[in-house]
Image 1 (tube, one colour):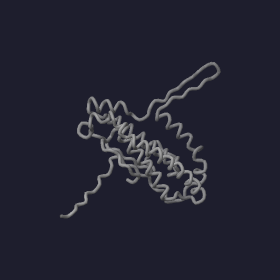
Image 2 (cartoon, rainbow, N blue to C red):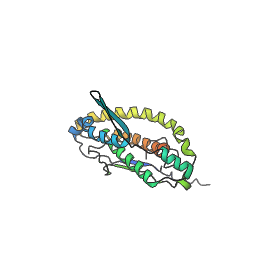
Image 3 (cartoon, rainbow, N blue to C red):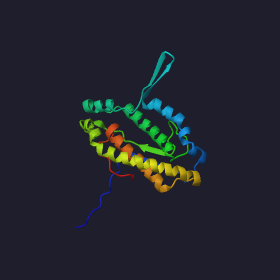
Image 4 (cartoon, helix red, strand yellow):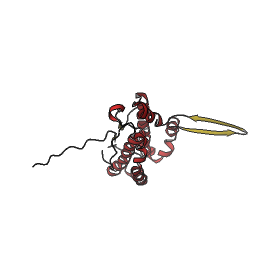
Length: 214
């Protein structure tokens, strides 16, 4: 009897960040938190939230709508077995923008995050056939089934912050991001996107793997 090896199917949600095999900008790296403020404010206006301020006795408020669409797609999948394409497109493009911002903050790229261009971050999510590919009731409990991932990611996020701080000093002295550190931070980002694709964006019923690698 011969053993047949079956290839492992790649997870539907795929993220990759191009490794910057070039000298990185030291000045931009040194003041990354300050330089990133404008794009963080811009991201906040589309990621959801509200802002309030007061002038003397007058109180003014402004709200920014947005964020990932979760409840709407969930209800459509459960009751109509449909996932409106424009809702999917919004979630996908918002996630892509968010990952470009995170990559910039994590020093993985020294180019300022674009609102629409791919740059060094490639995020792919499959558009689901809700009727044939998704269980209509599973979205009700996916957020709960993903709890083990939340726990693991909490520890990985702490490690990623430490790695980014070390990489910050390294770039200032060498203009290079150590490849091992880069791969670790990229892997943490990849893991986050898999969990989001499964539990929040609801594009797949396949449970996310517990691994950093593609």
